Image (cartoon, rainbow over all chains, first blue to last red; front, side):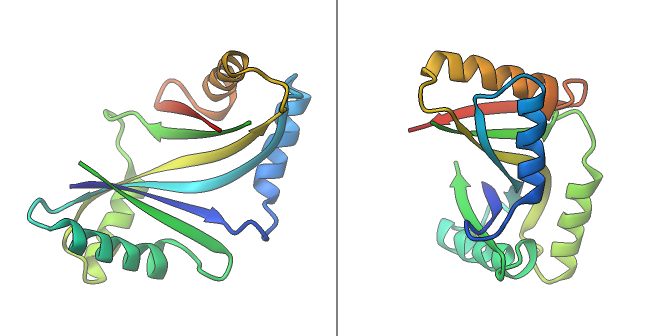
Length: 81
Length: 81
């Protein structure tokens, strides 16, 4: 079973990295780019014998406790196939 | 208009960062995690007056030329709303 985890800064948290990318894109001739926020993206492969409910619980725990900082970041987990 | 861009290492390219995360997760008591690959994730906000075809062309160009290294990375662009 495969899954995708996105970890992004909370909306209320400033994202200087994204702002820098946005300004760079504008200065490189792309003024249509109004805002950029950067996040982390993980593709996870899980043991085949895991059922979807257990997989989701495991990934929620991993995303919350290890892959993200819940003080400033949100995460979302999507199970694939 | 909003869009998401994912930049990931090509399947044939080794991902030591993902491997390190996978080993760390196993050593922290999650042996069900078989593999992890890490990528970059960008949420992009575009000027409202841009039509979808122009937005896609712009984002393809930005993703290919600036946000990714096409020698070792793939990208995918998804337009939202």
